[in-house]
Amino acid sequence: MTPQSDEDEVWRQIVASFNDTAERDSADQPWPDSENVPVEPTRRVVRPPEFTDLDDPPADLGDSPEEDRHDGEEEDDEGHFVPPTPPPLPKVDLTTKLAWVALFGGPAYLLVAAMANWEMQGWALFTAVAAFIGGFVALVVRMGDGPPNDSGWDDGAVI
Image (cartoon, rainbow, N blue to C red; front, side, top):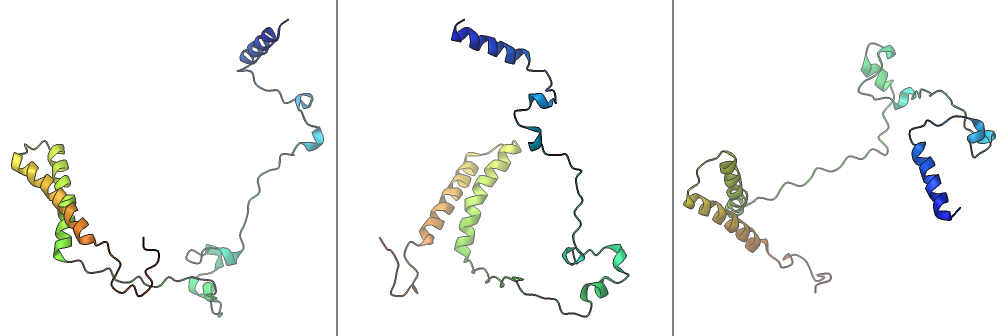
């Protein structure tokens, strides 16, 4: 028998037994019975009351959730992070607002007109495309590429 015919025979056996179910016989296991993990029923984990949600106390704790929560002791805020309020957004001038409206308004008009099957005139197409390009150019020109005026003596790694 050649090695090729051996492989073909093994392959035929694998394909023939593809849909067969595996038998749970200890003789077929490649490991000893002492290493089998016993099947245990699933356990229900119950958290202690101090870890339950304070906004939704269980019904069996009493009538008043406020009394149950405080018990006359001060709550411990140690380790509780409260982020600072963010600074207000910078004021945007009218030119920048118009540039953003043009940047998104031109393509939005073209998209709505195409979806609604509106007949688009040549001037409307030109205006929408020109608004998009003009808004983009205006935002890029106003972006500024230099360091801020208050950067101090150390500009970092300026190349």
